[in-house]
Amino acid sequence: MIAGAVRDLYRAHWGEPSREAHFEVDDLAIEVLKWDADANAEGVALYATVGASSRTLAGHDPKHRTEFFVGLLPEHDAIASPLAALGLYSVREGVALDHGHTVPAGEPLWPGSPMRSFLVMRPRPDFLPALELPDGLHVTFFQAIPIFDSELQFKSEHGADALMRRWEDAQVPFWSGDRAPEPAAR
Image (cartoon, rainbow, N blue to C red; front, top):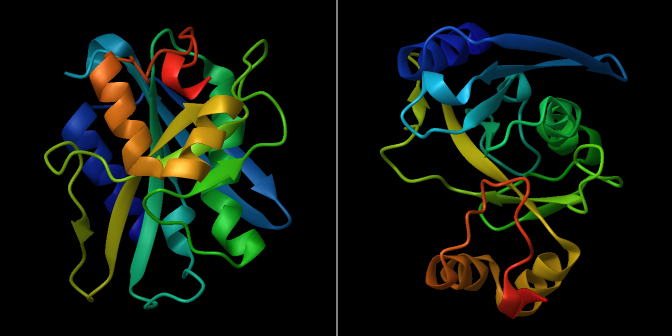
């Protein structure tokens, strides 16, 4: 039921996905859907989880659930596997993710990328609103931003919001898989 509602919300915002990938880890299943850059107003390839919200979050109200998405340009379809792992992180590690948390992938987020971690952030409120279901369940959507080790270090020292302000001030295209680390975070 939850997965169907999440799919419906994505389709209402972005149309039919161009790709679907299915992952299973330790008897846990999750999907990652993709929309091409020309299929959405953001102008980036979008990848989004379906299935993270099927499970309760450790230490949270059982009616609160989460899903994750990432926007990239150029597209890197290999991001699907690390994004699926992010979607299963809470249930596998017993830790609920929230705004400003970082999660290491343990390897490059796609072949050739120096980025090895995700920064979890609340998206703009108008981008993808929370999904409210009739039985009181609600799903929050978090943006997963690929980050460099130096940005992870800066975030650890100064906080996620300070990193976002640095990116904003320097006009860093954090959705670009080909970007260099923001100079102040090196």
